[in-house]
Image (cartoon, rainbow over all chains, first blue to last red):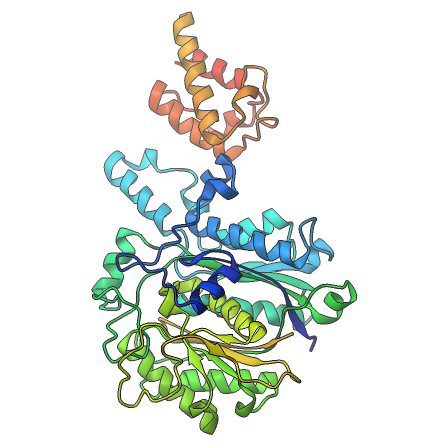
Length: 399
Length: 80
């Protein structure tokens, strides 16, 4: 199978506009949570789009387009993809899609009747709207579709896009995930599930954790066939060494306590990468700050990585930006790439009181250097799990 | 149809097109929807506004015949 490389990354997150902004501020110990939520407060749609473009897109699509702009520019695609149009595609994840559009139009339906519901309601709310908008903006005419697997969607999308290139269905893919679900319905619904932190604090793996903090944002990666990317002189940021996906087939929301589905995904991803657990230099945990996830994930990491589990630094991006749902896997893949490239492990913020049994190195406190010999590139894994039992794991190597 | 009524139709159509993101300076009777970058989704929304304001139904069959801003103003004026 062909090698797949990352040539561009872009992110809009609660820590600001830009992928490097995210990693730098997280590494500096900054937190993008305010009043118990993590909005992209620095993102102003009119900084990026015309009035027509703003009207033609839900916020989740706007976040996707803005993040893609950064990734596309970094890849050197500003004047168009350096491949035939039909050989470039877009596989893009979201947990929910255009929820605010749906809620707004339901309000119109309730208050004014069916004749006033907007013609734009469906094209804005559909969960493939992000993929469609990216394809139109960047003239991507190969495989283009949305991926929907709750909080694993961003990682599942990257995995599927990687396969599309490896198998030769396309030469390059724009991929990632986006979410903008800080809406009254989502707030109420996640709260009803007892999934959201009542304290309003994201502190993964801490004994006091009481749920996740809802966030929004987008992460976009440009993936290319490695041979083609190098031939055109592209700057390669990372190599997608391995991908895997499994499902718990167990419960609509709760993970298996033994983390078996997550273990299977981590093992399969390492197999796909052709590496043993002792080569893993960093783990970007799913680390939601919910009691169930963090316990099951710690168990899964121990099982999948064996002896290496106790030595590898593990941190959760969600400690800084909350849970970006369908965007989380993509944003965290980007954070992982920057961790491996810069060799700076940002901490699991808010982790002050370890829980018995959660005895791995979750990098509490502050950032530290990644301990990897300069003679070889660093390798990390990024875990993403979602309601529905979805597990997606990426193995990434700094270039 | 009084001049005042036609002016009101024009005003509502122009304001709608502006809301859709069309270049305000380019909006006039002779401007085509193509040059204003107004597409079928915008016209579906315009039809809703027109029905609400004037009780005039513009069907998708009508839309195919409409090329300019003046066309839609005249269609509304003829049916209002």
